[in-house]
Length: 207
Image (cartoon, rainbow, N blue to C red; front, side):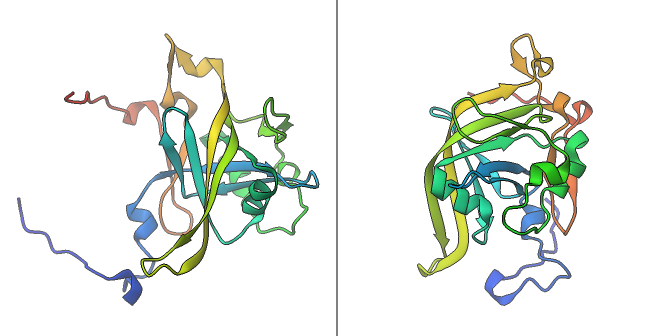
């Protein structure tokens, strides 16, 4: 292996670059496009770039919010949320729903999206999204640093209680990930990646 010249830094001392590389290295990342509702019935829709799946059975997904935003307050009040798949065709509307607007502004209306009532949760999904998951909240955890000091970030974990899939994305009983053209969050201020069929490859596990 040829020797590489590494840029090395301690995060607490600063990265020394023009833009923090952390979320560009851990990327691209799935987008947590989260719809929720507060105790008074007001709906919220917002994308989160810190999102992923954490367990198969039961299926558990989670998103992390930097700052106590409406989504965090809503899930703590009602115990429910919906994840909506962000795709290339919905990129502009997903981005519009990220706007910093006053509490009470309906991002579905703002982004021109259709709220479709849930089956098992009192939270709508994005009607235009080709896949969605209704969730019941399991835990909302305030994160902390290595010294045990709490930081202003909250991780929400939810159990999936219903899954919606556009049937056109299922072939021979297998969900076709790339056919939906999902988008993922990369680094900098506005970098994204699109999953397309031609970039997919298969590699079987050794076991």
